[in-house]
Length: 58
Length: 300
Image (cartoon, rainbow over all chains, first blue to last red; front, top):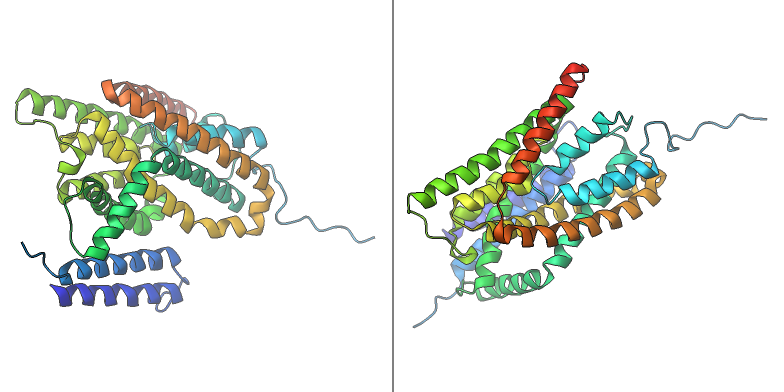
């Protein structure tokens, strides 16, 4: 699952850049979509953090 | 003498007046948190009073951004202790990399689970949905639908309790799926006339929260959504047209904040011992009457 979290974070980050620059969109930049993608990238990184932390020893 | 060209960003007949702005600020502050749909009311009442306000005008959009900011700040101030505890717990859990079972931490991640779906729905579908369903008559019908959502929620909850298969749940006892369900239910409020707090309180009741906890979770869940939506619209405040209503926006934001604070203070006490049905009756009567008015006057 850890690689999936990283891949998702990278994919959302790239999509955020694409939305922000308006690349491939004829109607200009979509900064709200870009911010949403950036937020999802952060969520994926937090997920990665939870997956990669050392388990508690009992 | 050279005739002066009319300024593109001067007041027009379609610019909101000071009195209208103050009325809309109070309306926003109250109806954003009462389960009666703020968006629905800000479409219906100007249409009923035949105010020639252009809702798509840049100055009006800037004014609305400030009203929402005022409401969000009021919610943050009212729940400041909860937000402080939740923020600390969330940061600590991310630093630690695991959940500790702390109550504030659980509520924080439940709010995150509820915020992601509604934020995505809002970002990708808000404009399309509102332009498609934004006519006053349609909004009046959705206000009637909002009444039935609340009646149905109360009826289903009573049935579940009468059947004895529900025992009552604390906020921190909810599952991640429960949090996401409440967030998705909040997404119904993209339809003008459907209340954000109404739909999320009903969803909270259906996952077995009591009215008090369902309302608290709904208000906490609304805060990041309203705040983030306002922040994303802040560039509108720097448009030249925004200066036309600068005074109205500043005073309106403060007024919306004060009325929102009073509303949430009232509602948190109200839901200790009361339910959604009075708001359902209000939406049914107001929505039904407004729909009949618009149909008979040919306003669709």
